Image (cartoon, rainbow, N blue to C red; front, side, top):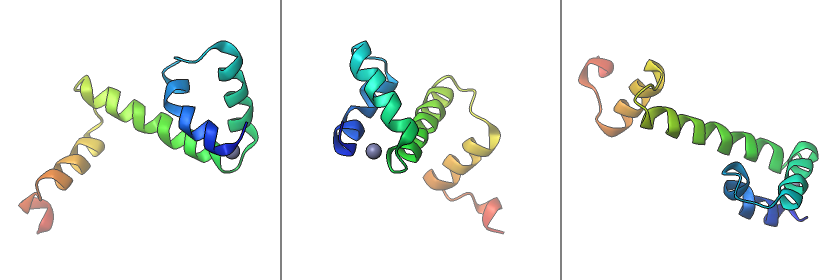
Length: 78
Ligand SMILES: [Zn+2]
C-alpha cells in the first residue's frame, strides 16, 4: 500500500471502520514506515485528546493550552 493511501485511510483505521485485511495492511505499513508511523501516532494522540476533552476530563495542561488559544488569558500574559 502506498503512503498516500495509508494516510487517506488513517482515520477510518483508527475508528476501526476498515475490514480486517485492510486494517492489517495499514498496521504493518505504519509500523515500518518512517513517514506514516509518526503521522499515525500524532492522529492517535489527537483523537485521544479530543475524546478526553469531550468527556470533560482533559488534563489541566491541555485545558489551559486550549483556553490560551481561544481567549488570551490576561493572567498568563503578566
Ligand atoms: Zn508510509
